[in-house]
Every structure is written in structure tokens, then in C-alpha cells.
Amino acid sequence: MSRLERSTFSIAQKSNWVAAAAVVAMMALTCADVTLRLFRHPIPGTYEMVGLLGAIVVSFSLAHTSVMRGHIAVEFIVQKLPKRVQTVIDGINSLIGAALFGLITWQSMLYASNLMRTGEVSMTLQMPIYPFVYGIAIGSGMLCLVLLIEFLQSLKRIVRK
Image 1 (cartoon, rainbow, N blue to C red):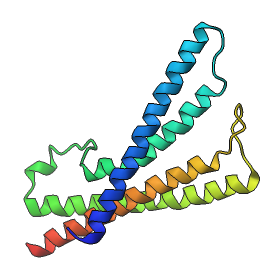
Image 2: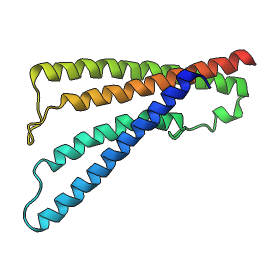
Image 3: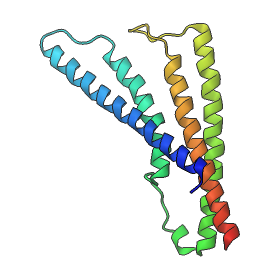
């Protein structure tokens, strides 16, 4: 495994810990809100914060999930093909995914900078939204990099055979 692959996979693992911390924060916030509702003192903005933390959970766990091959794949047709064809299909899938998430990264960066420029804030907490959109861009960019590495690995396997 090359140094780029190792460092990318290490960063993906660390970003997954950010996602895990966001899940814990969502759980703690929801539990506290439900408990305080019993005493007629709900936490204002809980729904907003859970939604924003959900964006962090999803975006920061994408790259690690791809590294661990934790995504859902329907392979019953592809498994019947020769190994070389399977490798080509994996490479094409990785390249298309990298292009898609590269586009998502680019558009998220543009959107976040627009939100920052206009000063867009959440409705209840009046919290800036752009850091969370930048988080989506970072997570999508990490997945794009992982998918490009997977494409290069597929290419290497195709050439080697």
C-alpha cells in the first residue's frame, strides 16, 4: 500500500470518529430534550441541531464506509462474470463515483461560500449554516479521493493481469 493510500485511509478513519462523535451528540441532545420536556423545559433548536449533526454524520462517515467496503452492493450478476470483467466494472464504478462526489464537493464549496457571504443562519438558533455545508464538502472530497484510489487500484489489477 502506498503512502498516499495509507494517509488517505487514516484520515478517513479519523473522519469516521468525527461522525461517531456527532452521533453521540445527537443521542445526548435528543435524550436531554425528551427528559426536559417531561419538566416542560424543552431545549430550543434541538430539531435544528439534530439535522445539522446528521449532515456531519453522513458526510464524515462516507470515506471510511467506502474503505471498509461497508456500502450495499447488488452483485449477483457481476459475480457470474470473469474476474477481469469484475475488476473493470469495479474500476468504472469507482471512477463514476469519484466524478459524482467531486461534483458534489465542488458545488458544496460554492454553496457554503455563498451562505457565508450572505450570512444565512438557522431559523431557531440563528447559527451559521455554512460550516456544516463545508463539512459536507470535506466529507464528499474525502470520498472522492478514496474512490480515485480504488479506481487506480482496479487499473493496477487490470494491467497486472
